[in-house]
Image (spheres, one colour):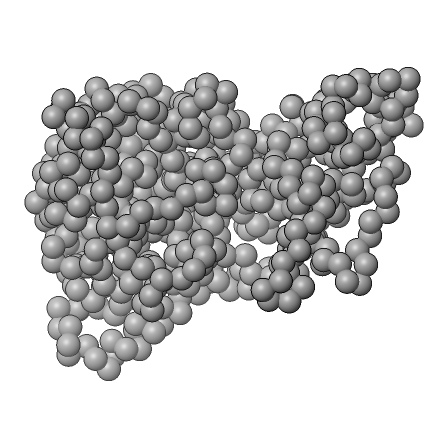
Length: 145
Length: 358
């Protein structure tokens, strides 16, 4: 796959992101604790500019009255309708279960494999495109067809 | 960013709900010094506050904050770029949400109404010919409201009146009739928009969460539809047109059925009514699409439209710049027949509003 240089590491410090354009596609590159992730800057729901959304955490309630707020800095909330996406996988979370799923191909190479465990939250219908990102000789590089 | 530029919808689009907002000091040229001073010293006073943020700051799309530093909806150039040009909007109806009708100080409300109305014409409609204004009247006082409608009505920049759904009394009430009489004199529809802060949204007190307001707003619209019909408003003002904005529409058919059935039994109480409630409703009401009910199956959506039987009355709206914005390119279900899609996206609104008079 062709590689595209998109930034130097100091341009995207941990917790930060940069929106780049590759071959007419807008892509958000995120640095989570030193690891880079790339996600398509277009929400699968209605096409909002996903990567300008709020980067936040994951709030869930295992039983009423108990709250866990975890994974701060790993969840991207669409700037339009607040659909939440896992930056590491592009998977959407917390959705009405009956909503029709739009299918997108997802490539996950870097990042942890964080498929939902049985105890984890329910997957949503949407998956945003993600792209593998590497740092080569002080450059952040995206691999993309 | 090319790729995030919204796809243009192939059909013409008329947007029936665009929230322009007032930049700091924006009303000053249109308010007398006496009222500017009052505004500075005492601000806006209604029954209760309108609490923000609502999911997002200013309830706005996070990408709708203009680079100029103004609030979402306050910068015409940015609105043109992000909405009117991006989606090739043919006409847009402005719906500024300044709560002039809710002011407890009625004279201030009337002054504020005049300022907001003059500001819409001078700063928006006269600058972009795609835009039209809504008369915001001090609607809790029939005389003052009628006066403002008579002042603005002759100007074709205005295509409707704009009220907020949670009024002090149900809108069929006699106290509002002078405003309707004035609106009919210029053939201006009465638009009722999601919101208002003059009473609880429900018939059973105050809910805890914003999500209950957002999801539950049809409760207020139920009340208004029922009141208009039962108070005999349409017998007194046979040309009056009502537009319900941002309240959805799937709830309307069951309400219609219920009112028809009840009327058959209790009609003696409201002898002014000459026709079934359903007939008044289908003749006199228009509804905007956003935010649409989204049933889980295609056939449910189709049934919903069939039950409504108001294909000529549904009108597309984006609600820009608010967070629950509907994209003209993506919001309507893909299976809608082209002729109906065209009606909803533009033709119904073009028929209702006299855009070409300006």
